[in-house]
Length: 382
Image (cartoon, rainbow, N blue to C red):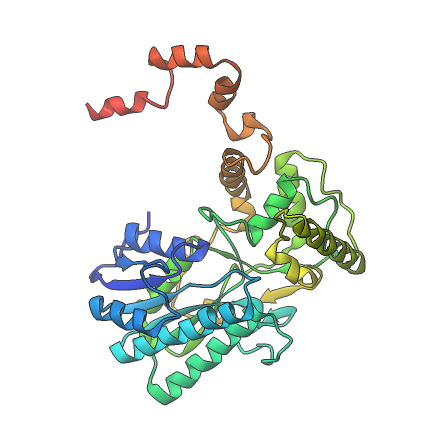
């Protein structure tokens, strides 16, 4: 377990967007492991789109820093995306200026073009044809720098790549890829050979932000790519997950992009027809980024490596966590009946769920006779 630094002073901060994968990791680690006092209001307690909500909330709670990890769904309408991702984020920046405290903004590699070894300065031009998500994130970054120059905002942008980690209740990002493999809805590889992307471990993010907060002179007014140093080929990740699950699909066949786009158009038509008959149907949000599956995007982390931050989990990457990710998410999806049972010998070593399914009376007898867990470990409390 990582210890707090000597002389650490407990601080109070507010984290916005605490229900997501990144925000949840921040809240958990700041509270449980890093020793901070944290509030993480949901949208019912604090709507960052409403100035009056913000003023009332921050009159009651005056934090020493704000971390903003809030974001709407990728396929949200332009109004909601603009008001939440941009207006809400700048509202919080204005609060940080008024209180004279640091503001940490979580941004995304969506503001970058495709390519290799992309630096922090290699952003896309702000244009109308960007996705609403990318547009809102880039506008935030530009406005934060404007506020630094004009109003003295103390901010840091932490730009993430494809985030992986446990404890995300939404099926998105890398989890969407895992779900498609588990659900056997991916017959082949929807990518090109050699396409590589950069990944970010959600568990590491809180430690970097803690370091950023404690070293403001170094990190104020800066943008940092926070990601694993080595990019990974997308097809390798897909096939690794498939092999862990001992499945036959997806086959090692690369589907050309034009064929993939034709398939998506067909699904969109089918979805619209189903909705006319009152059947709820929705394609995954990530479909809008299908072309990204066919283009490499690797982020340079040289600036991060040259900083004073030291990675506390330098030996952990996406491949080392795949078994844990599979066990966590597949078990959860099975419990929610989102997927059929796969291989209970692997995901349920004690086979209690299989006993529950097939021999409930024998299982109940064994529990009553204190022969098996889950109840025997509570004897230690007596």
